Amino acid sequence: MRIATWNVNSVMARLPRLLDWLEQTAPDAVCLQETKVSADAFPSDEVGRLGYEVAAHGEGRWNGVAILSRVGLADVVRGLSDEPGYPDAQARAIAATVGGLRLWSVYVPNGREPGHDHYDYKLRWLGALRTTVADELAPDRPLGVLGDYNVAPTDDDVWDPSAFVGSTHVTPPERAALQALRDTGLQDVVPRPLKYDQPFTYWDYRAGMFHKNMGMRIDLVYASPALAAAVTDAYIDREARKGKGPSDHAPVVVDAAINL
Image (cartoon, rainbow, N blue to C red; front, side):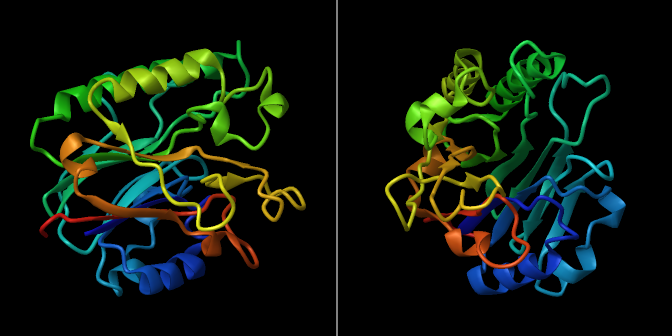
């Protein structure tokens, strides 16, 4: 089974690239983030022609998550247990069961800057994610929590730690919230970078950042023991970050020996 996660940074702006990528990569299920469309406006017909069912959770211009599957789509849940809002709940999490695998697609709040109300919202949101995941974990259940976490787990996951001093994405409280999530039993599936030594998944649009590999690893695949044990390969598809009009994130692709 092949699964993937990709912050597309607007599914409508990226639709031709998404459709080409789905045809070439042929994932069985994909978690998308920052779709920036309402659920009704998601291009379900277009991806449906490639054999994918869609579960979407969106609010229009901002945020938005989705799961695409060509191996079934069941038990869809939109939002987290006791999910905090800013001030209202936002479209940042969706779950579905695909081919016997439970998947969550998550788009963690950015946080803006330490001390900002949005930073506190981010930490509370990560706490709600931990509670939700803990309730869904079971010893033999393959489960993955994939998405844009807007947190780099360690200093090795940013191109220059000194460039991030005083910024979000690297602060001890954010990393502690990630550790608390992993402490439920999830494992970090670190993908192969294919190029360079560091498996970055995000590069700012500013000139040269991508080509100089001045990036971050913030798109993560957290897997239950049953899923982690089945993983046979994981890689970052840098090709999808190239060319005209890409997302500023690259997809993370995971192959796992799970019977469909």
